[in-house]
Image (tube, rainbow, N blue to C red; front, side):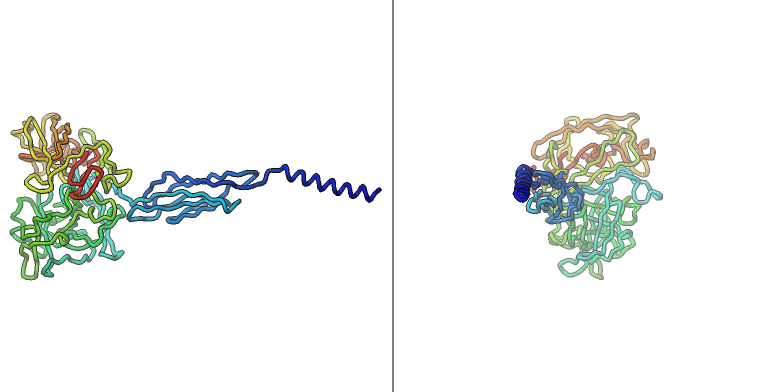
Length: 480
């Protein structure tokens, strides 16, 4: 009896345990879902990725992370790699409980296409004060090397094409660009009311992380430099040699991001007064091929290469001391350079009206342009506008006794029109105020309109480069 009772107890215990096991919930992971927000980012940007783990029973929600490009921490913080063209990375989270369960998300990475734009007192405020000049920094390198120099206070100019740096601030030994005869190639370019003279050199130009490799650029040299300025160059304008000094240029260089791919184009494929063949015996005008010419460096970027957008916030009457904005490369290539509701004003790419819109004032039409390199809104003359002028620091400006409000209509070659309302204040008061950024600064410009930096405040202004495709069609055009 005792032995039989013991056997029954053992069997009963086994059945009880089996019954408990069959009624419990097994521990298992059934899915892993990954979300990385935002899913479109730029080079080196950090974002948080999160994993949602689902399953049954008392399971662990921990995961291990992996990225096919860039890097990701154990906490899911993803750092994008540096890219020069759009790329993608797959982010995968794997369950530590059930390693066969994993989830993925794709992150799209674009090149960085933005760099700071600043209006301030300039590179040497202890010597002079720059006014209404928008500056950025540019990095140049000896081609194909890591021997580089970053130069600040480069004037951003939508009215010209090409990078030009003062020889007095450039410390790199850049190789020369020779002409078809094997001689050094120099250039005489009219810009900013004066001229720039000096050799063409080759450099890797880095803009917002994207590179224009082995791009021709101009080194601006002073009148006492070698080779000397030819008379055929200096006689082209009554303006000064802007390469003489930083105080003459009021910047360390000029970044021309205008409408055209080259700074001279087909005009200079025959002999002219822009490019010069400069052997030891002296410089003479010469023809140059398009690849030898100084290009708009934006066109040589790998991705955001069809134009630029300048953004500067609004500036009140009277001006402010400093303004910070953005120089954004590309039009419609990334989320931060979309045209959205901007009106597109196309311009001719050749002929007498090349690069010009039409501006109508008081029923009369005039040629116009949009030019961040000009300090104010430069238009017509005092006899036409009835606005008095005055001389400030050697230049003629509009100086009304009280703010003068005006209205014009801009029209593109495509027929698109838009009204521009602006005000002009007394330049003597503005320029002696201690401020450097003015939305109401104006000066005479007989027979035409030049919408300089004053026009840019409070607007997204696009400059599309000739023959480069954009969502609104190929350039050249302005849009705002």
